[in-house]
Length: 257
Ligand SMILES: Nc1ncnc2c1ncn2[C@@H]1O[C@H](COP(=O)(O)OP(=O)(O)OP(=O)(O)O)[C@@H](O)[C@H]1O
Image (cartoon, rainbow, N blue to C red):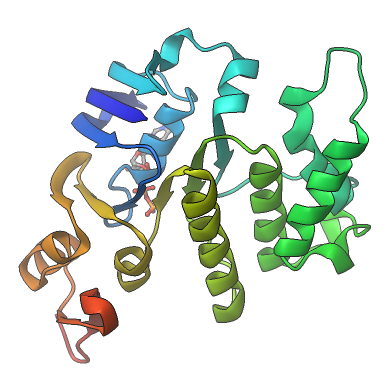
C-alpha cells in the first residue's frame, strides 16, 4: 500500500533524510520513532507530497508525484503535528472540511457528509464541542479536532504526526483504540510518528527507527525496542522488558545516562 525507495530530502541546505526505504502493506500500522530532529515529520510530509524529495514514493500502487490533490486527499488523510486551525471556524465546520474531496465542485456538503462528521465527532468525544470555535479550544481538544478532520476524510491511508502528545491518558487510549479499530474493520494503513516508545510498541505492527535522517532499525517492536538500540540512538538509559502480550515496555532508569 505504501512503498518508499531511497527517499532523500534536503531542507535549508542540509540533508535531513538519506536513502530511507520502507514498505507498509495494506492494513498494517507502522510507527516511526526516533530522537528529536531525526526526520520523522519530514518523512510523513514527504508521503503527503509536502516537501521536495529524491527517490520513489508509491501509494496504493501509484506514484505519489503523479497524484492530483483531490486524488491524494481521497487516498491519504494527514493529521499534522502543529496544524493551523482557522480560529473562527467551529469544530463541526472544521471536521467537515475532511469531506471536501467528495463534494462536487461548486457543490455543497450532503446530509451524509454531515452524518459522517457527527459520527466521527462522537467517537472522539467532541460532540459537546461541535459548536465551539477552534480558537477557543485547549491543546488536547485542538488535537482531537484535527484527528476528526483526518478521519472524516475516510481515506484508506492515515498519516498521523504525533497524534497523542497533547492528550491526557484516557483520550490517548481513545484515539489509539479508535485508529486500531478502523484499521481492523476497514483495512486502513496507518503511519504514525510517536515519541512514547511503549505506546508505539503496543499498537504498531512494525517500527521504523530513524536517527540522523537514516533508517537505523526496522522490524517488529521487540526487534527495534532493545536496550542497546534505544540507548545508542536516544542517548537514554532504559530498561526494556516484555509486558502483557509480550510487547516491550520501556522504562527510564533514574540517575542515567
Ligand atoms: N523547513 C526547514 N528548513 C530547514 N531545516 C528543517 C526544516 N524543517 C525541518 N528541518 C530540520 O530537519 C530535521 C528533521 O526535522 P523533523 O521535523 O523531520 O524531525 P522530527 O524527527 O520530526 O523531530 P521531533 O521529534 O523534534 O518532532 C531537523 O534537524 C530540523 O531542524
